[in-house]
Length: 137
Image (cartoon, helix red, strand yellow):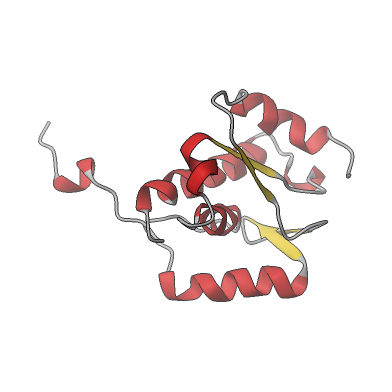
């Protein structure tokens, strides 16, 4: 099977695509899991934990922004980079995030991303499945 340069390198938003593409894709996979498990309507709050290098350089490399845009349902290869500031402004002004662009969740804090400077990351599946069952904080 032939390889393309695009198989090796991914173009992403932000000053560091390696710190934006992955979190945006992960946010999309989280949304896909919620849809597949038919749990989207049960989500009452959203918190994101970022670990390792994503935590160490997250804000400076726009990891938090990419994560929120991913939670809106935007993907790195299709999002219009010029609209990202508008998306973030709307989230901040309205105090809500529209998961997958459809399910509105009020934000208890605009800082939904926690940067955890630890080397170990808990199972993503465990967090994904338990999130909708957690009572609102």
